[in-house]
Image 1 (cartoon, rainbow, N blue to C red):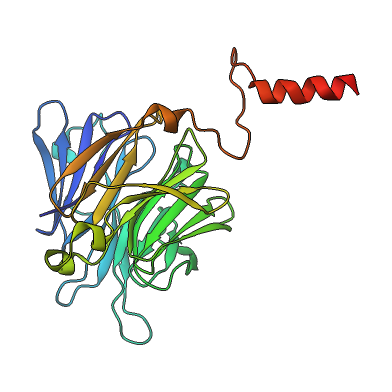
Image 2: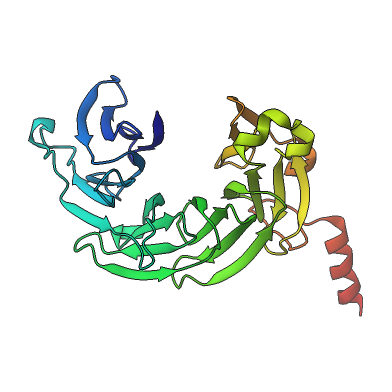
Length: 304
């Protein structure tokens, strides 16, 4: 079963992470499997570094092996037969002081590959040095499992989605908590719009209870929040299972949702949403005219 996948920055190669305790490197053009990297336990996630010459994976504990973070060197210009089977760096994730195992849930490279950003099922986030494996920082934004983390395009903001019914917005540079978006259900994914000050949240009740609950009661809608004011202003229905993944088109005109019901739904925003004015004035693009109300206010001030 596939757990995660990550295309390289130039989309020429892709890495897949699987519960069969392996990560596979693929050629996107031919579909050929370039190399298989065997792990000790199920591989939960993978992420490419800037430059697409190395990638990192997170794997679950298995038998006597702890959970691990692994970094592999895979230069595109090198012959794949020269790629090492072993990772360049392994970061062991031992049990906590109270004897509990901690599983990583997501991994992301920060800008310029300055750190590995890893979320965990105990609600914590850790930053690691990708060269030495040293832990650089740790903090606890959530009380329960962090299901997903998403960044905006330039990686200046990130939003976490948690089983504690909240999503939280942070500044990447100083890790400052900015906003909290509260719901009445587990949040499985959240994304930041690139064209509006909006946040999209998806989730729903636990998957094990879906067969006994209708879509309406299970609350499987995509929910829309204002990024600044933390207020919910709309929702989109359609799925009859918990939403596990969301993605917004970079042009801001559509979004996709994937759910436990086995469907991926592609949604196109209607004109009323695209033309909707947010409480905070938007920056006018070149050639765009101000609305009549703004012009009236300016003319009144001039007359005064």
